[in-house]
Length: 100
Image: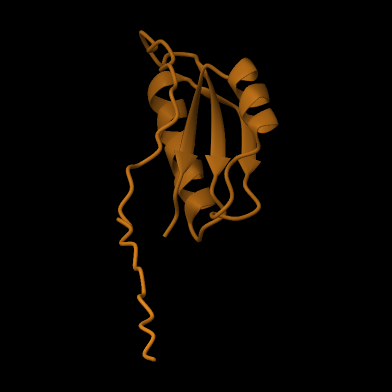
């Protein structure tokens, strides 16, 4: 007696779509003049220097004040939601720098 084993294979599509969380953009500022700026450094090389240079340029041109500076523990980790909440309450706008 002969037995036949049938193998069943299921093909799976490995592609996916990006999962983009919903969010609402903040209202745009009419001007940067005399605004309070927050800075978030992603912890990559030269990010701090880039932010410092930008802050100086904006201070000279618009009179902005750096209110808060925050450095992430590493580039691969997102900014802590509590930091985002706090910095958004204390600053008119925030710049995030990605170093090289």
